[in-house]
Image 1 (tube, rainbow, N blue to C red):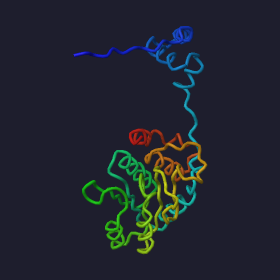
Image 2 (tube, one colour; image 1 turned 90 degrees about the horizontal axis):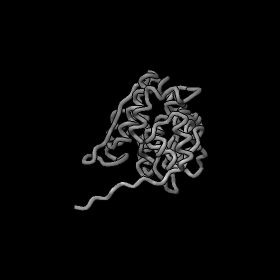
Image 3 (cartoon, rainbow, N blue to C red; image 1 turned 180 degrees about the vertical axis):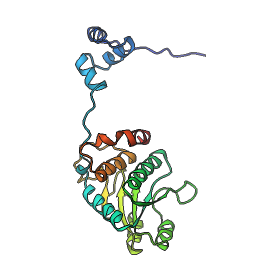
Image 4 (cartoon, rainbow, N blue to C red; image 1 turned 90 degrees about the vertical axis):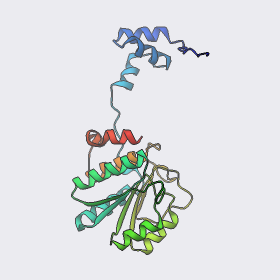
Length: 227
């Protein structure tokens, strides 16, 4: 059996030497130099400095989402978190559940399965939630394509706050708020958030954090897992 041998890209030897002199280990210095990071200052900026997290309210409709959720908390309404069955959806659900319960909200979670219900909102689930008297659903990692389901929710008297990261179609679902960095009219700086990342941003907005990095300790690992 023939095996392929790994071949390291030729590094910037002067840069590698500078990194070694700055105290970086041989392997890390070689990898950084191979990737064009040959100055100690650039390496420090990449590895040591924490860039500031952007204001969550830069996401389109975040203010509307926060206002409706805060209203539900104040009025004692039950908030249903509707997630997804993959790692991103489960992580996003866990982040938002923990945040909302910490804020004193009454929360229920609904996670579909591949076999039962499949991906995203569906008519049967909406009808069951309406029959139980729930009036507010917050989606995480889904909902941006649920046009017909959103119309049904409105007919059933259920309000939707949609948080998602998938590409939307031309038409957005009918909802109190649609928070998705991939909306054409969204001007937030980072478009590649996962569902858990969007949920993290929502929590930072709900918590009123001056610096969203304050929430990295309780929620950062879950957001990373979802990513």
